[in-house]
Length: 460
Ligand SMILES: Cc1cc2nc3c(=O)[nH]c(=O)nc-3n(C[C@H](O)[C@H](O)[C@H](O)COP(=O)(O)OP(=O)(O)OC[C@H]3O[C@@H](n4cnc5c(N)ncnc54)[C@H](O)[C@@H]3O)c2cc1C
Image (cartoon, rainbow, N blue to C red):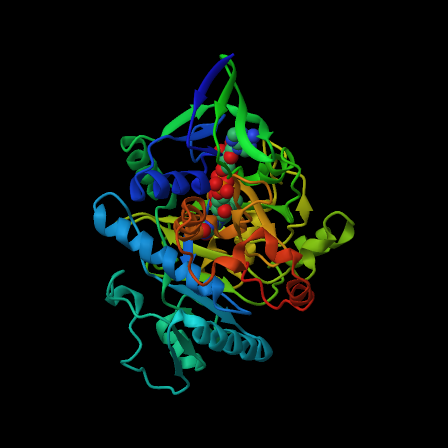
């Protein structure tokens, strides 16, 4: 049995673990920080994401918007540091609806995000094009507008977003949003952390040893046997396994996991404009089928759901620069809480359902129905809290910390959340949003009451 010592052990080298190491080692000069993971870094969930980011989050308070704004600030600093290597755009998120009631809700939630610090609203109701609206192709990351542009005129929607179904009656183009090479950002930070002294140990944390109620060591199983790492600080950044790791020290985390998939196809006929924002359709959809297909699907109990109304939330975006013709699509139409098992199994019909869903709102995609380009599908777990806010801060065992509950927004929140966690670990002063993400918030009866009436969670 071998031994080593560390100032901090981080269990899990996904984006949560890597950004924490970066904050501790590169930004704060700690040297003896060890990441432990049985897998190569950033390969379980953190290389499966849609790579979207947004400062467009609901309340009830400004904590999520503030944390995301901070996280995006930090991503922008990295982009300035390595612009040739890291990729990020500001194409925005385009929320769209054909339903007048939903349009009202979209405006109300836009007003809320604005009030919470996401930037100003510009509303366009008239028919004439308005020079205040700056289309995506006319700006870059650092000169982009913030806030959102709301279009309530079908004529303008057709003019600016001609790819969208002409049923759309309202769109919200949120602007401090877009996508980025999230895994590349992670690799870049990992390289920096290693250059500054962080170590990566290939192994699985099997046990956490306490002495007088304080973290004192972790036991790691490696291919060479058991390794004991003496440490006063343990960070649980174990992604889908975060609850198992917390249970090693008797702590129950209020998290559950949903399985989500991303579908990638080549849009070889180039029916989707390359400057399309990340489009999210806000209404339920009915998949397009021929009469014959519809009748056949309706016959069997197993397939009847495919002709019924499916939930809102189908989304898509172009991927890649230059002459790339890649299209990414996601449609979370069935995401109940599940056990986290590996390898992940996917339904063979999933890609076609996603394409059909997106074709209801980008009609030109119908050209691929019946001759779908070969899809590539990958996926992972959104391990999240009920209200979809992360867990960042101390656990109720001295020396133990959590970086979890980052669900479907882990890549974009990681930098801001890691900075927050590092401040907790080193005892620095904390930003105003820190209490909103501590585990102990659930012990507050007022917070429990708030949870009972929690509104939007911001999950797409
Ligand atoms: C389809 C899909 C789309 C997504 N889209 C977006 C998006 O657009 N934007 C966004 O911001 N986020 C998105 N996400 C979410 C994002 O990918 C996750 O929130 C993020 O990757 C989670 O990172 P993590 O570090 O917590 O977990 P992981 O990346 O899973 O890393 C956890 C690590 O812990 C290790 N581990 C577990 N147990 C142990 C143990 N006992 N000992 C040692 N190591 C252990 C695992 O091996 C793993 O490497 C998406 C996710 C999916 C699945």
